[in-house]
Image (cartoon, rainbow, N blue to C red; front, side, top):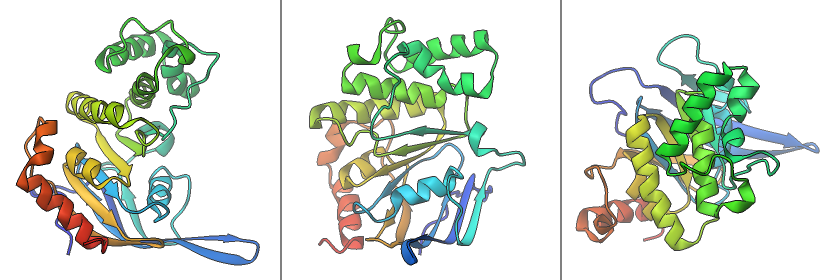
Length: 261
C-alpha cells in the first residue's frame, strides 16, 4: 500500500487512481500503462522510477494533457482553473534549445508563446538564469554552452511562465556521470529556491532516492504501481549521503520492488 502524499490531510496537487492508457495503431493495441495510482503534494519533488519502456513518459504525457487516460482518475490542481498549457513546464532528456535564439530568448520562448508581458518576462528570465548559474550567458547561443549548461537553460525555460507543475523526463540521462552528479545537486538547489512541484522521471535508482522527497516506483511495462513512499532523508542533501545505510535501505527497497534483489 502506498503512503499518503500529504500527512496534514490537505488535498494533493495531483491525484492518479487506477490510470490506464492503451495505444492503438494498425489495428493493434499496446498497453502502455495498466494501473498507476499515486498522489503528489504541492511543493514535492517526486521521483518516478522504473525500467526503460515501463510507461514513465506516458504518465508524464497524461499529466501534461498531451494524452488522455483511457481509464482511471486524473485530477490535477488544488483549485479550479488549472490549464496544462499555462500551468505545466517541461524539461526533456535533450535541452532542445533553438540554435538561432540566444540563451535569454530560448528561456523566453514559453512567455512569447503565451503572450506574457515582455518586460516582466525578460526580468524573470534574467533572474532565473542567475538562479541556475548562467548569469552572464544571456547573449550566448546554445552551441557555446556545455551539455549541463544547456540543461540549466532548459530548466530556466520551464520555470519562466511560473507554472504550478514541472515535469522532467530523464533530463540528465544524456550527461556524463560527473556532470550528472553536479546537476543532481543543482536540481535540488533550484527546487528548494523555486519551491515548485516537480515530477522527475528517471531509470536510475540512486538518482531517484537522492532527488526525491517522495518516490513512485513503476514495474516493467505495461506500467503497474509497485509502491509510492516518502524518502526520509534530510535536506539539503549531499553526495556523502549515498554512502549511508539509510540511503542504501531505500535503494534496496526499490531493487526489491523491481525484482532485482
